[in-house]
Image 1 (tube, rainbow, N blue to C red):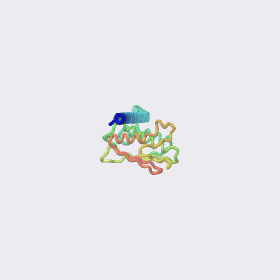
Image 2 (image 1 turned 90 degrees about the vertical axis):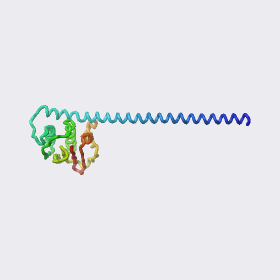
Image 3 (image 1 turned 45 degrees about the vertical axis):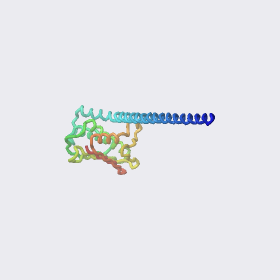
Image 4 (image 1 turned 60 degrees about the vertical axis):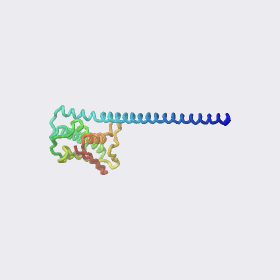
Length: 218
């Protein structure tokens, strides 16, 4: 083999080795990029979750304060369930409905041994009634009904129904608010669902066209 062929072979070998090294380096870079992108996505999801939770807290804080003031003032209210928090929320929200011209009917039984903390219960009930009140706004003959049902398995079984516009469609996890301040509104159903699931309860919601129905067990 003459010197020219040897040089050609050496050059080819060097080119092949160079390409192999470059391919390996590219693969390593791609793997690092994938890890960076994956880590960034995880961080992004964490930020989204934290931001969502902060909005939930902001959404609920005034509700908690209002009911806490009711309890601190200690004004007498009709005992409908035997649980002060529930009775005060029914009284507080019932008065708000009266002011807004919403007919409110209540059927209750005595409730004992609740399996949920006071703060979570306030959030669930106030969000349920606030959503119902908002759905009734602007309707002719608006109404809301609340029934506490006897249940051998759960300590609290409640069904709340309200009139609504046919034009408002239900998303099982979220109802688009009609209020201008969308930053603090529209989270009600999501918060209710999260708290009930966290406390090992059951939630059923149904859009019946001109009626919204929510039933939960805790």
